[in-house]
Image (cartoon, rainbow, N blue to C red):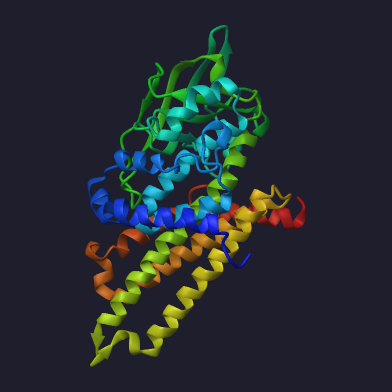
Length: 378
């Protein structure tokens, strides 16, 4: 694949225009004020960006994973934090469409697709991050439904989101005992920790989700008991492509800022762009981003085709592209020198935002585990 289809280009251009007008001018202020712009997210939803790969018959936009990746890259050029938040919401909406029943789709999707209601994804716990199958939040069945006890950690949107797609243990230890539950924010016994103070991603809240004898109806179970871990991993395949796309968009913005700067900045009587050391660094940064983008498109194609090696390709893309994006953003900061360290130029925010991409949606070390298992057939 060397050229994007015309339809994909049109979708990407729409997202670029939206990011330039609605996101980029405000990203620095949102970061400083730790403000989640729900009104802007709803404007994005009105353009179809809250259900990008939810099926059209379910009310979604019905795009491919490749289409979605170009959207998230374009939005991340305006702000990686906002793009990543929208990615999480899209993942939950897709999981309800893909694994839910007709009643659940009818109950949840209309409001999610307009972002009248916002969704969060709850997998990680204080004692289980990379070892996700070791989660301990438990749901006990009784005549009225389920009673939940446990805590989820590092949940984007917690306290703001209206719906929490939560992985809980309904059976024995291991992945086979995990189920997926749809939990409303107003559920009795559900509460939230304080907003975490973070290095980046400040425009979206991150809190614990705490369940203390939280009672939900039996109809809140997504799919069947014991299927939750499979659902979680399927959601993360797409989530890894999306977060890779967010890294690309942020890193491309950092590179473009650096290009403008070195053309204007003078040192030793000439523009910094005239120095071969600068030119070589810029050449490497641009090359690395183009290689990353090409591989992202290929990984998207594997997931769209439901290829047997799609999970491996998603892990490769996430590992390589988030590492590359973080490195390119840091190189951009270095090219700006002391000015890169100032908030005014926007690069230091990108560096802070992209750093977490190497941790979430599965750490890059876990991506290597997934890739190696695919290679060794273990």
